Length: 231
Length: 231
Image (cartoon, rainbow over all chains, first blue to last red; front, side, top):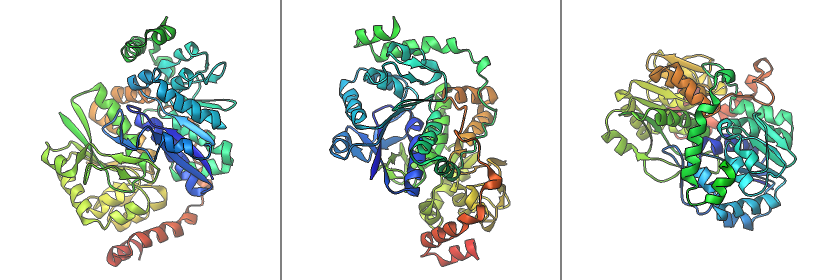
């Protein structure tokens, strides 16, 4: 039995977790030698950036008592994820899982937590487009692609990119045919009603002040980390 | 304050709910005159087809005591959703919400619940590709498209199609520019690693026996409904 462990913490962007979890759960239904686990500090439902609470299947302590997970995946979010960069207890949970895993993945700003945990040094990595430059402050090499693989590190761009990342991960674990089978079951044949994002028309700097103020609020009690990220 | 209410019941496919909920929650963050609500029979976390439990923000009773929702959205799933077609209590919750709403939406096999509730008579509608023919048994007109709008009824194809449906709904409620803004925030610029689904190569009839046996198991105690759907 091989395990993929998803890390859950308060305030995450729900789709960051549920997109790849759905992909991986369909994979595990096709191949029951894989098991999916969602771990958090306690078994209580955790709030998200939607009205929904998410209830984990395991505590971190239970996960740490299990056989080493093959992969660990960390979702992102907005202010709560920025704040979690200073949550040494959570970072240590992530480091412990990552030390034992073959694959360490993230979705959206989840890669900032990998970086804060010291897991991205010299690694090519991505995150939500509006936070991409922060990765360099965490000793990673920022790459503006949808899914970036560098050795054991697999990072996805913002929110919905976790679905693409998970399909790439299924292909890595079990081959392209399996990935196509999962894609068919979740009918992932995307047709954004207004087409793909028109990147040349996106005013990227316009969001920078919001990112900066959110970061400043989130890390008000951690001036050294804040300075590292913003100076 | 206008409300979009998502219907939660045990055993759903998590992404059916969380995909559109994430889209609509970002919309509500841009325009706080909209409120998102997730309602279930009780406030307890509800199991899904993943290891995650989903905790609603409201009970159905609380929802029914609120101002009428503008839109109600019903997610789907596999066997538990088929079984829910015979859950008169849930169907009555859906009918009550739908009677008061301007827009009635579904994701994946959620449209089978709309059909079982008598809400699709003569309406063009869609569902997961493997269940499409069942819609005709529920007096709907099955349409093999990703998002189908017919008057107040907006239905999405399987699982991930709920994201496309919700973006179309945002455009309907607040215009295309808003929908593009939400799309950018969730970085929905999909790149399935092995391309779109290659429909001509999909062996559609191959899944029919599985759908039939799942339906037969789910509705074993409801022979008349089963006969209506399968004979």
